Image (tube, rainbow, N blue to C red; front, side, top):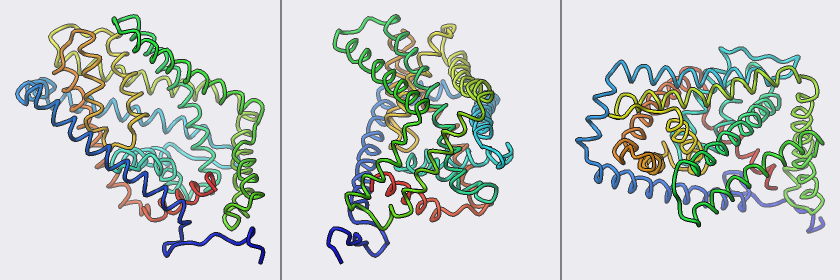
Length: 365
């Protein structure tokens, strides 16, 4: 056998050693970030004082916390509704299918350091009895594209608002403008890739295959990647009328987040909260969620981001930390619901991990 076409060796778990090494590095990074987050969390609680935080929590009250949980439920409904519209005929998903799947995905994403790597896959596994895996994966990817587009614009507007509402050092201004430019460039690139139907993933897999990397996996993986891309591109050609409602659901998802922050501020702050301040807090929170998704429950980093904004708006550091803790509590609640759904619906964590690993290998060769 030619050495160039020799299949890559696998470890006892059936993984390519190179991919297993990369996964180990991500686990170590996730563990380090989690420890740093715990340290930040302890520092902020100590600096603000447990008494002040408890006072804010008491001001929310049981009824207020139930309302916060309900708002987050509505946000989940928005994502689930958008996903349902991203499934191409002849396949179909009902809201009763996508809603629990999204809850499961959010639970795993929040609970474990590498949750972001299996969140989308877990949604697909949760509906595997309703649609084929490749259809589920492409519909999740399509919904994520819409979500990413709206979220990118949301963060851009939040960054611009932050610049106009604060006096920052020149270095911070340059960094924020750089962030705005980067996000805008990624949005434009994604739009061009979809409009011009650039088969980036399948072409990359074919290039790896021709270079004799991962041939055992990419023998069939190339075709799956091409089918995956064609399903996404086909959706944009066939269902242009669905664009508006999908975008609307994504916008409402973020609007409900702003409402949640406004409600919390109205309960724990002595000053009357403004929509502008609530918008700033939610946009920064969304950016932190994206950047530090490896940290379970965004422990520490969410409080840090909220503190920066509340101090900028002269609301006080204690308000920011209290907001972070309250929002973390509702994530804990919905994570518990997600775990219950995993066990009651027979969703296999092993199946999710294996499918996610196959996707990772296909993309990286």
